[in-house]
Length: 322
Ligand SMILES: C[S@@+](CC[C@H](N)C(=O)[O-])C[C@H]1O[C@@H](n2cnc3c(N)ncnc32)[C@H](O)[C@@H]1O
Image (cartoon, rainbow, N blue to C red; front, side):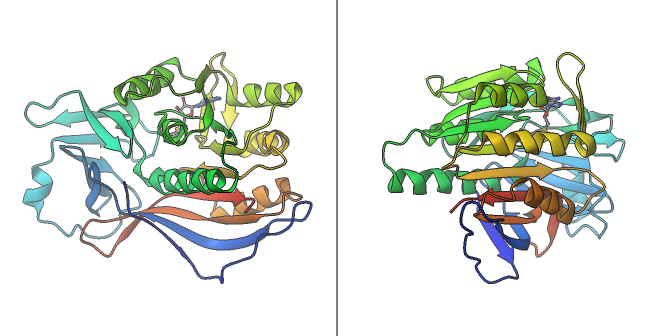
């Protein structure tokens, strides 16, 4: 598994009582150092060099403004290079050096997953999310110690690769995974089969996340933990528009209603948006104003292998009840 670390400049905060606004802590930096199948090797001059399983890969990275540490010869040995738009979701294409398999297998703890060279520079995993995976796993285990036999229900919205669904399910939770893309759901199910975890209780739902959530509210369903990792802009299967700035507030209103009275957590991550973590912190704080607990917000970063530098990847805000 990854070495994930938490940095913050505030004293440990006590958790607020239910019915009160959450206690707050920010900035919190969640750092991932990588694991056997992932390392950030180097970065600079608008690019990053990473290792995913046996492949070394170069992709554009506007945040990498410094100078690469490793020699150009090391970069030249990369198996695949993505060239194109520097925008996170921008189009481009892959160039390969030598015989590179289209897909390959990797693992994180009990979960195995397929790496693949996809359009929009994705490779089948978002490594910075490891900090969230470990935290969720810890929450589930703590609860199992506290309330043995309690069946936890987790909702994973915009679930894509399925890693944030498979890992909690492997820890014993019942998981509902929602994504608008049939292809993405097929990839996630492929990861489930590859992991030999086909028997896990996961509901795979191909639907617009906002519609699904609104329906769950009408049905009166609740969850013990909610994970949402929305894109800046996306579309539901019937063309429904997701725009983080206009859609997120309403979705958080609904999600607040989906939190069970004994709920454990909610995690929001945001990528490639022109906002600071303060903005999503304030929004979460407003929407969870009676939840008590603790709200922490900041950035997800990846630490370079053998290096002192960190790469900022995304913003997050997470709430926990205890
Ligand atoms: C940033 S990715 C999430 C990555 C995921 N956390 C992971 O680690 O694999 C965004 C996902 O949101 C999905 N998506 C986009 N618009 C959607 C919508 N309106 N409803 C549901 N899913 C949507 C996309 O299909 C994509 O899989």
